Structures are given as structure tokens and as C-alpha cells.
Length: 612
Image (cartoon, rainbow, N blue to C red; front, side, top):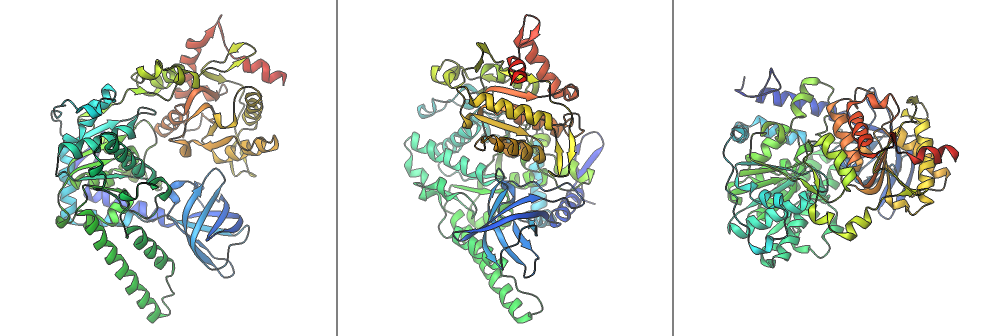
């Protein structure tokens, strides 16, 4: 057995053996595939677009979100077919396929998505003695040590807030943690970090990673903007984005950031993987395998050649593990800093491998929001893979970005005291800005200001719907439909409203009701999909806040995500049973104390909607 490294919780000791066992278990769960029922299919240019709905398959049904981009889609109809998922649109319940082989699937046919396998490369890294020892060495950085000295920043960095200035020096520690609650400018700060390190250390190499293409793209573009801002266009040429599934539209006018040849080579490999012939035709199969292996070998060489002269390489964690040997190759040069964004969604074994690449590692994210997704039902696997850098490096030097410019004072107060110990405040500069305040001006109804956080307690009880294949709450959906009708009849635009719920079935029900009212343009989303979004008015329907799921730590984070999307108003549909949920009760209790009027909680909507 490999040596004991550290403890999680009270008694659970984690070893490399247990990490490997958890990863193997997670790989088994992921390999089962995620089933969807096809509602319709159509060709669109060189893509095939499928409208689908999740199917239950002996476990909870699949969630259709961005994480499935890059998945292999397979259907087994009369002729069968396959393709690669290139774009997912959860709001429409659609995904687009490229490199499609075979006829299109029929309506009601089953299509199974097999997510991109990043677990196997990670397992292989943990099986090797050298990389495992480097991960163990990275873990030893969790020991408490004094923070690196914060130096005054050059004049070009003067527009930063106080905590952002402190955060820029975090990478100088062996491990640093950047806590970035919603609206605090975390990505802006990461971009500044990268620009500062490039200008201060003339030979420094920086590896930027994250669990999603969006996180990596945003960090790299933020760094590019900072270098432009401080007049260092010469350094912009030294940064490269490695990958094949990022949004090329974001890089218009930034061709210098794209690694030439990598995108095309990655596409070639994706096409080859989908062309896998039957093993019964041995000659054809061997020829295909040799061609695929040659393409992969060339790509590894290309990645190393791009990484060697680059001072900044930006890559998703999935791609990093596939190209680990190329990027960590001694011939590429030593990596001095690694910065991982959205690190609160990176599972522990992956975070340790990311940290092992460089002398200094910075993890940025918000551990009070969404955690890593673990598909396995095994509790020990969940306990290991559900942990992040914020758990094991909790004694490391850290900075909490405490000034946010998304939420108005009232919403910020509720979110801050419920989820952040009262530390989160409205940015002082924003609070003095008339335009910022105007964009978050309150909504009035019959001359009365609607409370910034309003709890409507007429929501009713949840039921299981066979039609929608999940939990729904008809009463709250009706209230939401009436509320949207009322909102759109005043000064509110459809794009100002965001309706959130934890359950896809309720999302479908609300969309159906709004569609019958001719209000399809109002966005209705699950909470998981909404992280990163914001709107003036957010309406949150928990549907069944008494469920164990919403009373758990995961539920607390999810409610935080929902509440912190609101710029001007947060409206929560929560009946008496829902308010037994400790997190919703805390929100309701503080809201009532903040907006109590003459001994009665101000809710002009109650009268208006009852009359409607």
C-alpha cells in the first residue's frame, strides 16, 4: 500500500491507492453513457442538430450541458450512426453533431452520449511512480507557511480594487487560493496576475488551466486585454491557446493567441476516432489504428513544439492530462507558475496533478458555489473526488475578493450574510456610479417598491410528473407565468428576466406555460446551467426545498448560485414546507427583517396576482 498522505474529515485517510480506486470507479460510471430520446433531427450546414430529452436508465437521468461537448454520440437504429457533439444548447434541449456517419436517428430513437474520457489519462498519471511522487510533493505545500510579500504594483495596474491588488501577488506563494464570489472580478484579476508575472519575471513560464473551455478562454483573453492596457503588445505574442473545442469567435482579432496546426490536428484525430472499423476486418482495423496512433504522436510533438517557446499556455484540464508528457517534457522548459480557474469544480486528483507541473500553483474559484461533478454513486468515491484544492490547501495564503459589482445592495446583503459570513459588499466605486445604480433601479407596482428579495409563500407542493419525467410544482409554475405577464406589462424587458429551478421537469413545465402566453423569449434554466449568468430580475423556484438534495451542502451551493444571479431583484417561490430548508429560511428571515413594513412583510405581488 502507498503511504498515507492526509486525512479528509475525521477518520478517512486518503492514499494514492484510494485515489486510484476512486478514479477507476468514476471511469466505470462514466463509461455507461448517458441516454437521451430523440425528439427530432435536422441537417444544418455541415452539422446535424438533435432535439432530445433525458431518459432514465436505472439511475438519475442525464443533464444536457456544456460539459458534454466533445462527447461521442451513438445510436443503434436500423443502420446505426455516430458523431461528435460540438455544441450543446441546454435551453433548447439540443446538441449539434459533426463528423456524422450513418443515417440520422429517427424520432423516439435512443442516442447515447459517451463523454470525453479524461479519467483514463489521469489514472495513467497516478499509476506512474514519477508523476505520483510529484503530486505527493505538491500536496506537501498544504503545510502552513508565511505568505509572500506583497509589493507595490507598477502604475499601469492602478485600476485594481484593494483585494485585487493583494491577489496579484498570490502566485508568488508555493500555493495560493483566490476566492472569487460572483461579480468580484475574478477573471479580470487572473488576467492581471498573468500580465504582472510576465512583466516582472522576464523568463517566467505560466500554465493556465480550467475545467471548461469558457474558463480557459476568458482567462487568456483577460490577460491579452491587460497586456494591451499596459502597452506590452510584445508579450501578447508569447501566449498560446492549445485545444480544439474552444469558441473561435472569441478569438477574432486575436489570431496571435491561437496555436497554429493544433486545432486542425485535433480535428483530424476526432474524425479518425469516429471512423473506427469493425475488428472483424482485421487488416482495415490495424491500418486505421496505425493511422490514429501516428496522428496522436504527431499532435504530441506539435504540442511540445508550441509550448517550448511560449511563455503562457492556456489549456483545459482534460486536454492537459492527455498532453501531460508533452507539456511537462523537460525540453519544453520549467513551468514557474500554474493558475487554475474554476478550481472549485476540479476534483482533487486532477488538482494535485495540475499543481505538480509548476513550482508555484494558484487556484481560483468560489468554493461556496458548484462543486466537482461525480457520477459514481459510491460514497467513498464521492468523498475523495468531491474534494478540491480549497479543501486540502485551506491553510495556504489566500485572498477573498470582497467587493462585487453585480448585485444591488439589498440582494448583496442577503447573499453575503447567508453564504459568505457577511464579508461580501457592494463595490464602493459602483455604489457611487449613477449609471450602475440606474441599471439596478427597483421595480414599483401600484406605487410601492418591490422588496429587493421577495419570498412568495403560495408555492404549493411538488409532485412527480410522468409527462415531464421528474418533479414539478404546478402552483408555482402558474404564479411564475402570472408574474412574468405582470413584469412584461411594466418597464421590464424579456431579457431582464431569468427563471431558475433545480429540476429539468419544472423548467419544461414553466417553458410550456410561458409558450402558451407567447413569452418564449424569457429565459428559463436549471441552476447548474446558470453559473456565470446574471439578469436584473431572477425568479427562483426550488420546487421541493425539503428534499435531502436541497438540504445538503450541494443544495446550499446551488441556492447560492441561484440567488447571486440577480442584479436588482430576487423573487423566490417558497411555501411553508420549503422554508424549513435552513438556507431558504435564512434568506427569508433576513429579507423579512430588512423589508418589514408596519409589521407585515411587503408583498404587493400577492394582492395583484390574486386579482389577475
